[in-house]
Length: 351
Image 1 (cartoon, rainbow, N blue to C red):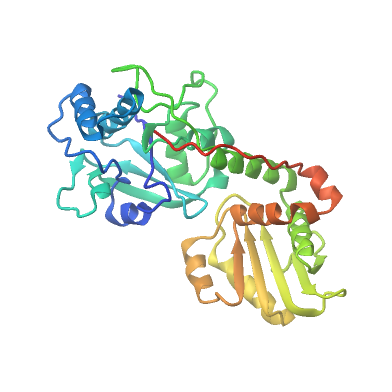
Image 2 (tube, rainbow, N blue to C red):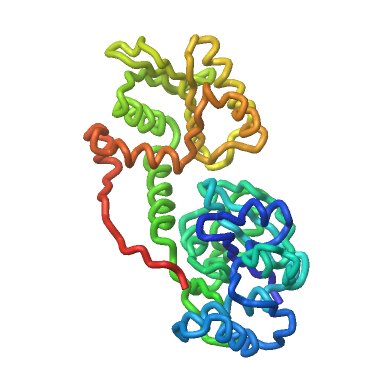
């Protein structure tokens, strides 16, 4: 059987993510359900779920059973897994290394249903992933197969090279994101996290519209809306300075900021942080802002921890949040290039 790719989640708020990564397991969940080691068929799992959950909708029972049967049986050793991280704009990617295991000794029942995972990459930026695959990774389910648009091959490339090559032209047309499969049952459509999908769609639009030097202008517009006076560096070598910002009409008052803007999809390394520190010292600036669209690497993150009261990092999510907060105060030109409308949607819980 060909290698498959699976989506795993580790809690509604990502509360089990670091536990899963540290212990080399999938994200748990399904705490109401007991050990499924003796379940030999999907029908056995359905029966176990029905007993555990009692009077709930039949569709809910079948949906949860489909996810658990995938965890128990359908996921194969060697299959790829993706865990979108709730607490950072990144994905963790790995491969399944063993069969289903019920950790009966675990005090927390939400940490009992697992598959052993070798987590190969734990900080692949979401910005490195194309929009169609991000949509698939927005499924609400705790466990589901990600199959459409050549997902398995693309996840493999993301894991090995940190980039999304897109779907191959020879691959069959799109399939639905499912938590079961026509081999043993009808597919169960998985709802998508609308908020995350909207954020990913907006991130794709922003990087298409403001890639390269134009992102400096967007960042400067946000800072000016927050009361700074900014000078944007001209195109060319910047020695770690993309924007000089200060308070007051002339931009001479404190706090004074050195801003470095990196619009590439990959995480920036510690050398960028060192360059920013050098620029701050040279210009006698009290504070620095590193706008890293693809986030920062682990070494850079460790370095920046020691500079907590001097430097802040804005990832793509942080920059978008700053745009949202200040949108009404941005220039007409920026708002024309980035037309946004606030809408309210009903919060519907998964499952």
